[in-house]
Amino acid sequence: METIETVDVKHHDCLTERFHQMNLQISDYTFANVYLFRSISNYEFVTKECGLFVSGRNRQKQSYVMPLTDPQGCDVKTYKEILGQRNFFFPIPEEWLHYFPEDKFFISYEDSESDYIYLTEKMAGFKGKQYVRHRNHLSQFLSSYVPQGEPLSNNNYHDAMNVLREWQDNSRTAADKTDFEQCSEALQKFSGLALRGTIYYIADKPAGFIIGEELNKDTFCLHFAKASTTYHGIYEYMFNDTAKILQSQYKYLNLEEDMGNKNLRRTKSSYGPEFLLKKYHVSLK
Image (cartoon, rainbow, N blue to C red; front, side, top):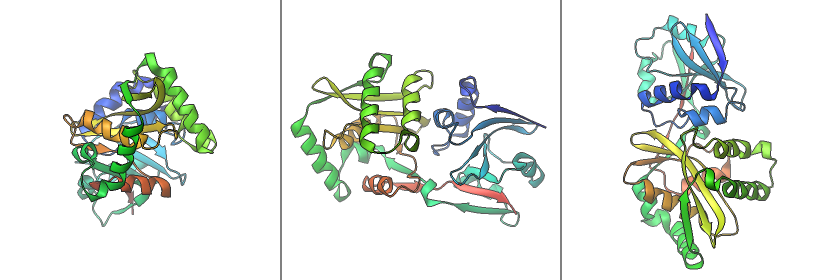
C-alpha cells in the first residue's frame, strides 16, 4: 500500500531533515530543487510501509524513485516493492552502489546528469592557467564598474525580478523552455525555502543575482545565476565574489548539471571543476 501526495511546502521540514541526514553532494537532494521543479519532473511524495520516497520523471518521461534514506539493509523484495511500476532508482551516489549486487541490478549513468563540483578556494582565487580568460574578464569588469552586493531579501525582490525578466528577454527563448518560472518562484518564496543569495548593483541599478543553499556541511549548491548582458564579466565577478563569501564555511561549490546543453557544458567546464559527480540509475534485472 502506498500514499501519494503532490510535493508541497508542508513537506519542507520532513524532506530537508532527510536530505541533511543523507549528507550527500548531489544537487537533486535539496528541498528547493524538488519543490521548484515539481511540475517539470512530476515530483510526488510517496509513503510506503517500508518508508518515505520521492518519485519523479526525467526528460525522457521515464519514472524513478529518489530514496530518502541509506538503502543499507534493503533486500531485492523491498526494492521491488519500492519501485512498483517505476523504472529505476535515481539519483544514486557511487558510495551506495555496493548495496545493489550486479547480478540483480542494472547500473548506468548519463554524463549530462552529472553535477559540476568546484573547490570554493579555487573559484575565489581564479589562480592558474585554467582561469586566465576568467581573470581577464573579471579585471575588465572591475576596471569599468564598481559593483555593490547585498543579501537577497523581500526588500530587493522587485529588483531581482527586473534582472530576471531582462535575462529572459535576452535569452530569445520561450519562458517555458528556460528556468524563468522556477527562478521567479524561488525569489517569491525565498525565505520560506531557506535560500541564500546576493543581488548586485552597478550605479544603483540591479545588475545580477545568485541564489543557492547549503547542500551539506561541506558543500553549497548554486541554483540560479542571472545577470544583465550589459556588463561584460559580471558572471565571473558574481561567481568569484560568492566563492569569497562562502570559502570560510564550505569546501565545495556544486553548480549542478548541464542537462546536455553544449553552451552550459562549455561554460561550466571552463571554471575548472574539481570533478564531475555521477548520478547513477539503478534498475532491477
